[in-house]
Image (cartoon, rainbow, N blue to C red; front, side, top):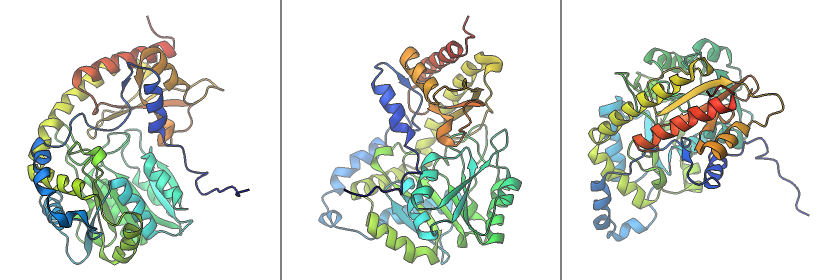
Length: 397
């Protein structure tokens, strides 16, 4: 008999497949669940791929850092848009998505039992990665408006703390952390000899004139900052799996070991598509962000119809609304609300317990994503959601 294994016992089951199964089992459901965009990569980038694939050298292993042309394009983008200049202090590595970059980085910097401070609510895949590596996530509640509680995060530092994680613009809240708060977190990390893990996957998705800030642009920050970026959101390349990480140069040996073991190199067709997408650049993405801004207003207006039943800060980033509803009755299964609204009203969202908000009998948090569908489908989905909430809480007229 094979003995039981326990490494993954503390890791939560991924919520996205669970909700996806509910959607599949209820045809006609509008999913406001998964965090993807409703467009694909630039047509010009796709059209350029066939001619590039004729190069026989592309069918062999490449170096762990990435295709040289893509690495050069990313370096130029970082310098121009993020004010992040790669010199002797930092290096770049292309991975199969930024989730892989995050997992690789945890493996590279931490020993089992080390702690990672996460603002709560947190991005569940990061919490899962920390646990998979035998490390300890330390959730620290954000402020009521979902901004960083810097003082509480400072108080959570212990001798076992290895890094502080920030995600801005944020998943699941949509909060864009202020430059001042990100500078404060980065300074805390420098003061205590910690790494700052800065997830910037949603960097282009900001509204109302709010600006994204990259902590690695702070003078001297490169030596302790790891910055994570993704092609999935900006360029509609979710299934192509391309991300990249900027990390301190002294971590290269460890990062090289992890990358060479797990991946060797990101798939070459995906890297070539990313290279072509970057040639289109931020101007290609911006009209899509502007369109999402209009959808965002539609979502907010519909949710306001719930009155005092719902609370949600109007955040300025990503494409999410994280709202607080009254707690579920004692003894109610945490997923029951989501199952009921999918089966009865044909609409799906992501429950807040997936993001660390597990006290469901005190508050029923739900995340809506308005990025994945066209404007009309989002509007219809939110109307269904409002009806589902009113029905569940007995307030429907």
